[in-house]
Every structure is written in structure tokens, then in C-alpha cells.
Length: 225
Image 1: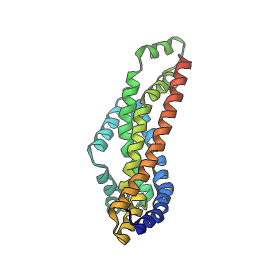
Image 2: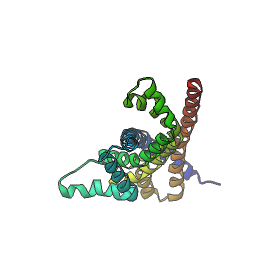
Image 3: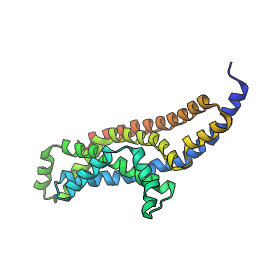
Image 4: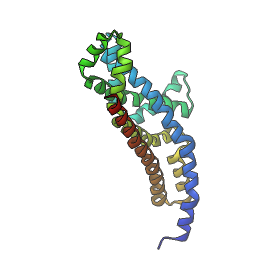
């Protein structure tokens, strides 16, 4: 039998955990991923276009970000930059780190998707009088993003879970809220399982949206075909 007091604690703590999820975790994920997509598309396109200088800069950025731990990046921005006189509040610091970090991984996904588009598509675009930028915007990029959509959706799920690391820079997201309740009640197992279920709930919603989005993109692709 589960202790009645424990059930009451879980019921009371659920709202205290869910609220930071809705007000901090979800906005942090949405804003960071949106900025990451802008970074990723730009980094992927300069590599695909083989723009000298910018391509090397994009490769260097991807190499550094993917080669260093996300936790180290958070510590560097939030705790390290103040020594240089640059102080960033927890939420903007988390947005900066997560968007730059995710942008590097997403850039490789989009670059691979761009390279998977048949070369004949470019030639066909030139034949009908389109410029390079028009071909990329109207033909290549839409096809590439359709190909990259499942992988990018998985990256979004990973980012949502990784936002738990933002607690180390004092951002009051779900994990920090849970740790505070644990410090007061000493019910670590039950409460950490509960916050895990809340993360699972959020990820399930994203998974459902992913399936819906894939269906829409597939139907759109068939119509275009």
C-alpha cells in the first residue's frame, strides 16, 4: 500500500513542478530551438554553397560546440563571462547556450538533407530561368527540410530534456523546483519519478506533433509530385 501522506505530497507537488515546466521549460525550449533553427539553416547553407571563409567559420563553430559538453558551455557563459565584465541573467544565458549548442547539431542534419537533394533539381531550376537563391528557397530548402524534419523533431525532444541542466545556473525550471521539494520532504525517489513523468508527458506531446507534421509534409510532397 502507498502511504496516504506520500500520495498527498505527490498531488500537491505536481502543480509546483508542472507550473515551472509551462512557464520556464517550455518557453526556454521553444525560443532556443527557434533561434537554433535560424543558426542551423545559415550554417548549413554556407557549407552547401561552399562559400570560402564562411564555410570554414561554420565548420569551426560546429567543431567547437559539438566537441565540448553542454554543461561546460552553460558554466562558461553564466559563471565565466562575469570575470570579463559580461553578466547575463539565467534565462537569456540558457537561451544563448541552448540555441548555439543545438544550432551546431541541427546544422549538420540540414546540411546532410541539402546534399541529399538530387543535383538535377538545381539544373532544372536554372533551365526555367531561376536564380541560385530562388532555387535554394523554392526548390532545394523545402525538400531538405522535409527530409530533416524527423531528425529535427528528435533534436527538439532532446533539447526539452536537456533544459534540466539549466538548473545549474539557478534557472527555476522543473528540476530545480523538484530539488527544492526534495530538500524539504526527503522523498527523493517519488518526486524524481514524478518530474520524470512530467518530462515524459511533454515529450509525448512533441512526438504526437511530430507524427502529425510528418503526415502533413508527406501529403504535401505527394501533391507536389
